[in-house]
Length: 385
Image 1: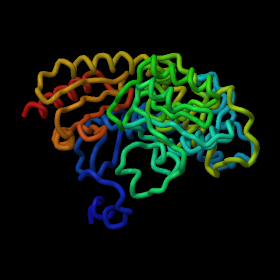
Image 2: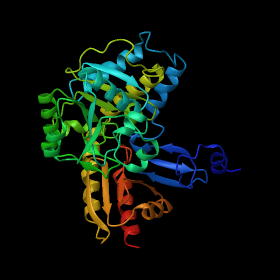
Image 3: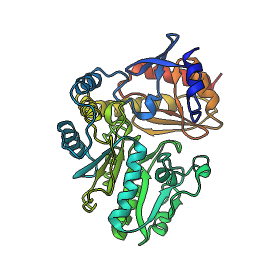
Image 4: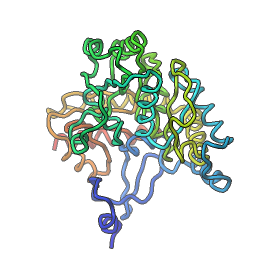
């Protein structure tokens, strides 16, 4: 049997898979089992910022795997200490502590728990069009009905307001609100950057009314938007910043960056067996070091501006708007995006949807400008043929 046949036989069935089997990657390129090469603008859904098979990260993983792979947080560890120190140093919210976990959903779950613990309140205000994850707490703050409805009832006391609507935020945030959770750039919801007025207004309201602000930077972190964190575009200093995806160069890892408004967290109120394991921490140290050494943040800003300009010049009646920050770009179409994703794949370009009608690009930050030119040309071709 082929790879796809074996996987189809044994997989859970919860994933809608594309009809190709990828077996190798390098930089911003992937190869399928037949040897066909693709330019990857899926980018591990934002987890491959430093590129596939990054040699610096691979070497760090190999060395650490021969030293110590797993160690729970009941013991201190050199790699964990170094990773926590690094995250505090680069944090956008002047964090002074870090909780390490294994994924974005876990970072969101922990942030929601800590917001309730820190305030003694239960209410959570989330945004329409939001996506925060599929575990029960994260799902409770995710807007899309198809994700939520099969699992009702979810956690109580969650309300939703329109994104980028400060008047509705003023109405919703009360003395019963534990936390307000917001994506600095909505990803799954269509690649919508928030306005400065809205995001800083949320911060001010939370501080006035004793609520905690949770910034979801799971997809926008580690250089994706042309800053190390998207919060830096606005001077946003959330109480909790949830990060994951590209934190460790593709290894499973997440973290919560805890601001100084968050009270001391007592032992045993939360935990994670694999959180902060030495292997992931070694990968994270290497990945962040690579981002800094190779100036990938500035590269993302430069290439993102270039690519956005290329896409804006495409003449097609199907395009409604091009938007984004850095190398997080959405092309909103006037009809469903799925057929165009399939057509791009046939022509050697991999891209993502964001909702029903937005074509989303999340290429590794190491992508070459010449590859972006090819991607733009292929998008133009499939939209006009």
